[in-house]
Amino acid sequence: MISDDRIILGLLAALLAFVFFTREREGWKKFYVFVPIILVCYLVPSLLVTTGFVDASESQLWPVAKDYFLPAALFLMTLSIDMKGILGLGSKALIMFLTATVGIVLGGPIALFIVAQFEPSIIGSGQDAAWRGLATLAGSWIGGGANQTAMLEVYGYPIEGFSALLAVDIIVAEIWMIFLLYGAGASERVDRWLGADSSAIDRLRDKMADYSSSIERVATANDYVLLFGGTFAVVGLSHLAGGWLGGVFAGLWGEEATLASEFFWVVVLTTTAGLLASFTRVRELEGIGASKFGTVFIFLLVAIIGTRMDVTKIADAPAFMAIGAIWMLFHVVLLLVVAKLIKAPFFFVAVGSKANVGGAASAPVVAAAFHPALAPVGVLLAVLGYALGTYGAILCAQMMAAVG
Image (cartoon, rainbow, N blue to C red; front, top):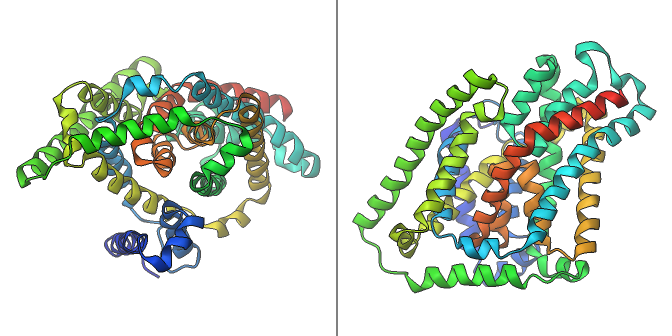
């Protein structure tokens, strides 16, 4: 069993290298048609953990990925953004995002009610009441880790039982992500079934890709030092300012407030820095491959996320796992029904869902699975998810309390 982070990172890097080496080889092209490369980069690490070949239980790769790779990717992939083009995507993007939020808010009490009919003991009482623990799941699935922690503090669920809910959170959400990544590889077929017109998305994708081609040039060492120096300076300053802003809001509204989270501010600040840069000559750094380096960070992030999923943990909390599965199923069905009614492209279904359920760590990953140039759309919706997370989770918790 491998538990050394240095070796694990080496294995993940080798996996990424193998996937990108084989993607253009004749014998592998058909395989990647049916199994998208981003799905391979996600599933293989999870299988290494599930089979016991890798032990990531004490790994510190995720904090590194979250604090360094993710903010850097957000900045690099946002600085070439076409804001006018994104706003031109229309109302369907926002409708699908809000539908995803409603699916989580309503899905919680419905799932708890259904499972309680078969397993009444799951309801609990006092501080051990199931709804208190499930409120943390609502916080995570509408906003993210900051909102989840806020719900844990607000409702005082015992920390001993929280680990089972973390397993539900990760496993159920990541299984859904597998389907989304697979769907991204077959989005044209899904769009035909939905009756959707994805031409606006295609135009934005092509426009951003054409812009990258028009300013592409041979890079020098100075260019790369400038690119990475500026990027990680932005990341460092975002952490500095994020810690300060988080402390200010913690003092005003308490540490459970969403705005008291340093990570929330890091996401907002790096995204804002990239957006502001997109209106200046800094945008021309796309010519030396800014978004391509962002893509590398995204794929490293995907592989590291994969090491956090061990499907054997499903057995640790079967009743909670059942609630999580029904909850997510309601969320998915509602999304597909609304998408079918308004003829929304599958891209909006996938990114709207992960902007809620996965937040800034997953939404740009899913968006990039459709095309790397589309990652900024996921970033912008994920920030909106953070803003709604606490309020939606509190509403969901109160509804679950009424059930229990």
